[in-house]
Length: 276
Image 1 (cartoon, rainbow, N blue to C red):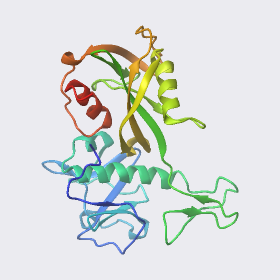
Image 2: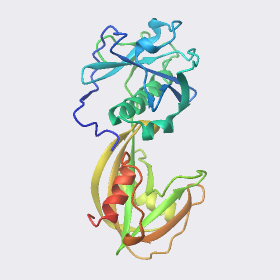
Image 3: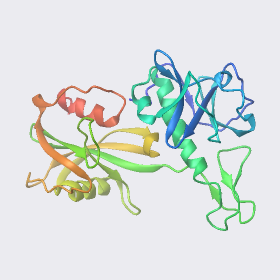
């Protein structure tokens, strides 16, 4: 999956160091796009590859991967060049090496948090970054703000030798998905599984079993994957605001996954192979 970066080691600790232009990488975003080096394949640029007009004071330490630092650029004033191009975040889904794709998605998660928390939600005062940890604090009322992570569930619903596959409403292209949704206040993860399934496809389930988890910076969330078995009627009642399609598919008719970065793909593939 996206976070499986092999021999590379991700370090989320807030341990900022002075940027090394030749070694460290820059994560620059603009209106939901990421600035990448356009060569034979798309890559995250190093600091030294940035235009000369880059404001070094706008660099914000993000994290380290195997001793190399990644910095967010907290402005949106960098312009494209012949090599540097802004592109949609979906480009990261196919980026190689995988550790670089993971860095881009995780950087976007942090960027959304920083840019969405410039002012105190209690008194409106500008927030200040703590020097020794990843925390934004209000110097007036003392409010403390930590990175936002939204828990969500993904569920593979099994009926005999069939798996329920879905398509999201309002999306064109792409493969099948599974029922998914965010956890609400006061819910356990299992409660969310039951509620989302009933709301989206009108089914009841039993034997809910945890499978795996994944950080998913595209939606600033952490995903918990479950499998569950149908309990009762197999008749689907589709919620059209959420899904455009939901179908029962026999194991042998499920197409092999064309990507291995997402928990959804891993779960569908595990069922197709008979591992579930």
